[in-house]
Amino acid sequence: MPVTSSRSSIKRWPSAEQVLGAATVWAKEFAAANDGVVAVGYFGSYAVGEAGVGSDLDLIVIRRDDAPVPDLLGADVAALPVPTDILHYTEGEFSAMLERGGKMARVARHETAWLIGGI
Image (cartoon, rainbow, N blue to C red; front, side, top):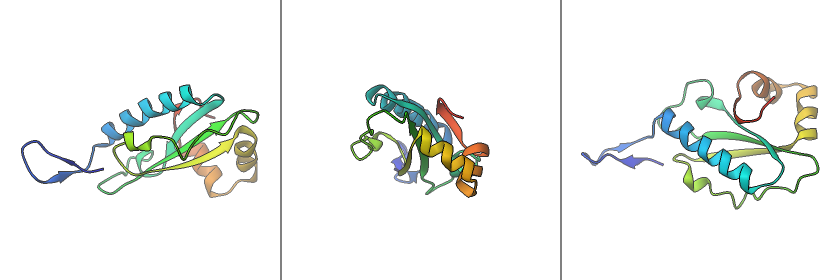
């Protein structure tokens, strides 16, 4: 979310470095708290270097097929400095999506930056 500068009342959107640093910490903590999470990545404007004021963070979470479903609704994305959307796949679902092809498969293969694990 926007933060107030210490010298001004002007709101400043966090830098990409701040967002991605917070995302890295979040991904490690989320994976540690959710058994079976094998990969966490981000795609969209932050992954392609086009993030700006108002950009949200788009995450992909992949878990083992036999792992319990992580509590995505309870995931504390409030620790992240911008609004965040999460796509969740099992490894099987993710592999099937890649095999089917399409836009999301292209994004996953070519435009996703992996914080943990990856393809």
